[in-house]
Every structure is written in structure tokens, then in C-alpha cells.
Length: 93
Length: 324
Image (cartoon, chains in turn blue, orange):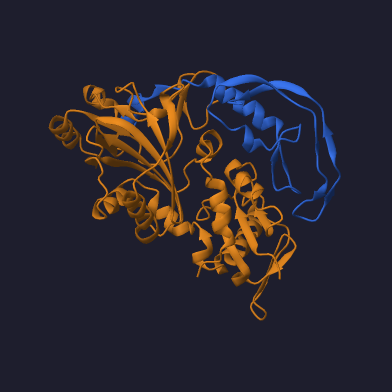
């Protein structure tokens, strides 16, 4: 015998953004929570929240730059770090 | 002079909390807690009225702001614990919650009980009507005869879920969280009465019907204390009643009138007792906004990142002001 279901389940619709759903998950899995910074960062050091956008991705280049040294909120000292030039997909930039 | 102390209560994976934390560096002392991973060191002495969380000692009155993105009324207890582990977990949870509740309610964005009250559909929408904010007519019922009468009277209706509980249809079965194969899930949908034709398949779960607003556009408005941040969402596909289903939808920041901003801020603060909240409005062809949904912890990060609305910054600033 079939189980009875709530009426609203007769109105389910396909999720149209499966690719985005998968891409988001890959990005989240590659990120990790940094207890010193108290936020999630990607392997290249970019805060994960900055990658959250609904705009279409475009290819862009990021010049090499030096991250300044300084103290984290928990008092840990982080030395300066050079981030090399890279080309990547970044939405809306 | 000591820096202000701010407490963030959110899952460690919460990116909205991340965005606020990033605005607080070097401006305060920060404690971030994920209730799914209870802090190892917790203490409170009633003699001194001093607490300790994550190695930081403080008086509850010293906390200038607490940003809470977790339903603290629900303990995240694991079902895999044995009796002793379960008891220990409950004690640790009670200690943490007890300490957090010592922090004055006025410092919370948002205090959990008020957020819980504002989360449903029925109560906040009814309260909004009393406050002079228009809402579409709606019906919540288990009775098929009432659904038929409402649908007949209003012709164009949408059906939407009452709670935020996730559910999906994948691989020929219902599950709560789908994997990466194709799946169906619930969005706001045009109601065509298809359930009435197969009524023997349905149980007596309450159903929410709401009249359809003939809209020219939608507004997503985030309120932070006395500030409003609005985004206009153009929907050229008038048959699509859920803007989440529209690919590449056209959005832009929108300036709401000062009167509307004041009314919405007062509604948030005085009626809902909240300091942060997001609202969804459908604006009809006569420029009348109708409140569709109230989300105390709705997503606002896309408005901040894509449209430059400084919501995270505003939350950070408000956390730094100790409101009594």
C-alpha cells in the first residue's frame, strides 16, 4: 500500500542549478575553518565568503602581491607572504 | 581602555558569520563558538560573576554584542551517544547556554526565543497586517473543502511550505538532503488543484495557500537595527512565482522610501523584537508592497557581495555598540 503524503509534495520542481550546487560543494570541501582567523579559507588563503556570488563567472588574472604581516585576533603572529600571479574563474570580476 | 568583547555563535562553516568576523579584526576581542563542537573550557562563578569561554574571562555585561546564527533552542545532541556521554553532553550544553543567556538580551542579534517566534508564517504575517504592512490573503488548513473554497474565491494562488524543513525527491524516494544527482524539491509553486484530483494519496498535513500578487518586481530587504538594505529583483517571467528558479535574474540595489524604511525597522524592533531580519516583498502594479516572507536569519551575503550593500559591516558596527 502506498504511503499517503502531504499535498504540497505534489508540487515539487526540479532544482535548476545542479551545476552550481555541485561547484559550491567542491569549493566548500576544499576550504577549511582557520581557528586563528576564525573564518573559512580556501587553500590559496582567500576567505571562502568572498567567493559567494550569483554572478556568472569570467576568466580573470590576479597580479602577484604580498600579504602583509601582522597579528591575528587570537594574538598569533603571521609573517608576510607572497602570492604569485594566477588566472582563474571568478564571478563578476 | 580594553577592547569591546563580541561573541559569535554560529556553525564554523557559516559564511555569513565569516563576513562579520572579517570586519571585526583588531577592533574587539572575539569569541567564536560552534554549538556543534562545544568549547572544552567553560566556567562561571556566581560569586565573581565572571565567565570563561575559549580561554577568555569576562563579565556578561562586558559583552557589547552577540551575533547568533544558530537555533539555540535545539540541542545538537548526537543519537550515537551512550547514556553517560549523552548525560555529559547535556550538562556541557546547559553550561554553555546558561552562560550565553547571562549576556543581556539587548546585546543579542537576535535573541533566540524571539527569532523562533518570528520564524513561522502565520504569526509574523498576522502581526505585519496589524502593523499596517500589506500581506496577501492566505489560508492554512487540513480541510480539503476549505482549500477548494479558497482556490475558487481567489482564482490565482500559490502553495508554499510552512516550515523550512528540507525535503527532496531523488532516485524514486523522499530524502531530506539530496546528493549530486538530479532531484526535485519544494519551491513556491502556482496552485492548480492537482492534489484535489488525487486526494486519496494525501494525508492531513496542513497546507498553506496564498493569493498570487500581480507583481511588477520583488524586493529583498535586510534590516539591521535602524538600517535597511534593499535589492530589487526584476521578474520578467510572470508565471514564475519563486525567484530562486530564475537563472541570471536581474537584480540591483533599491532605495526604499524613508517612511517604509521607518515602518519596517519599527516592525522588526518593536513587534518582532529582532535586530536583524530579512523580508521578501512582492510589489504590485500600483507600487504597493506585499509582505510574502519573514526570515530572521535569511541569506544576505549575496546582497553584500554582488550589490555592495554593506550589511556585514553594519552588523559589525552594531555589535560594537553595547545597547542597553
